[in-house]
Image 1 (cartoon, rainbow, N blue to C red):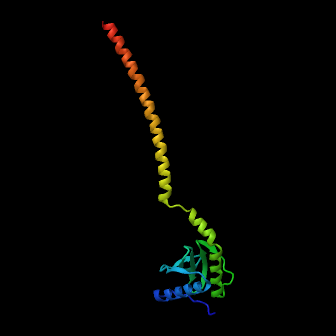
Image 2: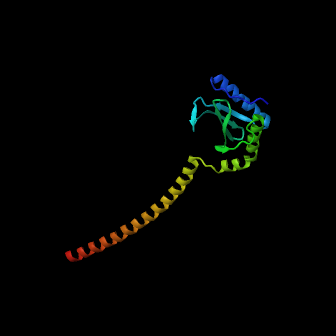
Image 3: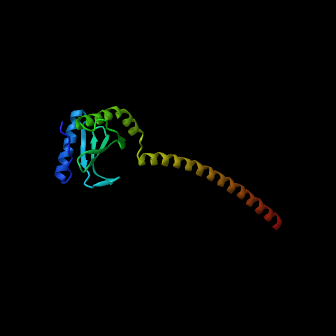
Length: 167
């Protein structure tokens, strides 16, 4: 197969090349839900590249870093770098990435289920904190009532002593 040369000199050419990636992933058995070509050009270690982000139907992501020459520079699967063994053949390399997606699906879903949103964690912590605070306030109120009772009894004793002295 002829190598895919990713041309990002214009937005239309970049989207056309991204659609080629989507087609190849579909042939490899991975359904792409959305694709996005980053308009910004990045530069790392003297290599200029653009990012092509692909989101799949099972929420996994693949980010392809494509050099100005059109070659795939680096592949990130779910945010982690993945080495590609068959870089010369784009169909085989994409099939390799699709296989990695399939193999890591169970682990990815398990990690995804463990991730809790900020609202969930604050809600759980907030409820526990409120319950603990309510218990603490209950004990504080009970202690204060006991102090008030003892002071009231002392006051009544003192009033009795004053009344006895005055009579």
